[in-house]
Image (cartoon, rainbow, N blue to C red; front, side):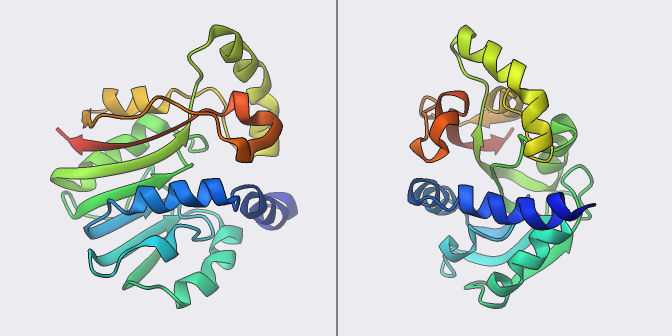
Length: 209
């Protein structure tokens, strides 16, 4: 797709999201993964070291970016759990209905082309009562911050290769037929520096209703 999106941006994203605070959140997120697990938007594989081989029988990962898949290769080779990597996008998952016990999505819903379709696919491939674990930056509750998120999203979509600052991802999950477990209030993340006030994070678990 281009030098920036497939070479420069994957490197920049790894640098930006390699902050210890973000990595701690990744660890906490995947600690809830059990059984046969699917992760969509796998990126360069930053979550991979945190999967527990005593709890995860197999991990399948989906990532559409060739640049991200190249960066993930070394991590895939050192995976602590049996793993299958499938190039592709969350809008069209090549798996049967009700296959997975857990689906993981980490800082991905902000960038997909069709959030509703991705969530419909997540719900489809989850087993009944399967869990959807997500960590996302979301639309702020404060109207003044919302205005800035919406103003800056067109720029962010270019710099962040499709990333939106103004998606209410937790509400979209609830509206897609999931029941959310009790979830912390969105928090600012110092790792995002000057963008912290415009990138409040939520981490949650949702059950396929």
